[in-house]
Length: 105
Image 1 (cartoon, rainbow, N blue to C red):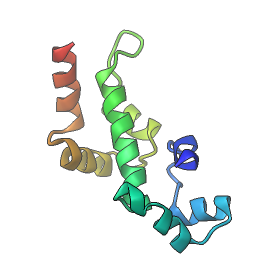
Image 2 (image 1 turned 120 degrees about the vertical axis):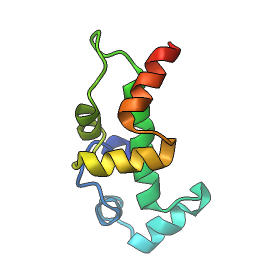
Image 3 (image 1 turned 45 degrees about the horizontal axis):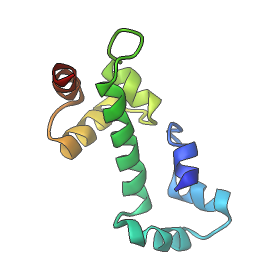
Image 4 (image 1 turned 30 degrees about the vertical axis):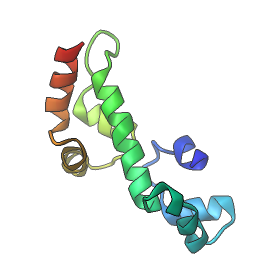
């Protein structure tokens, strides 16, 4: 999990790459994630989405981060995939989430 966090912004972060970096098999890595209730792929995506939600909710330099900038900063290389994944996880688009989070502050 630490390796995932250290490389979260890397769009090339994969289960195979993590397994290689940790010198374990992909199956061994998958078994290690059983206690989280998520597969490694789900864990990576959910960590990225949680980080994106935090970034969207915070002021950055006096203005809100754009959805594209946020998607790229957390490791998504495709903003439409990011938006679909974000909407599934949080029930609204990243832009709408940003507006809701801002109005709650």
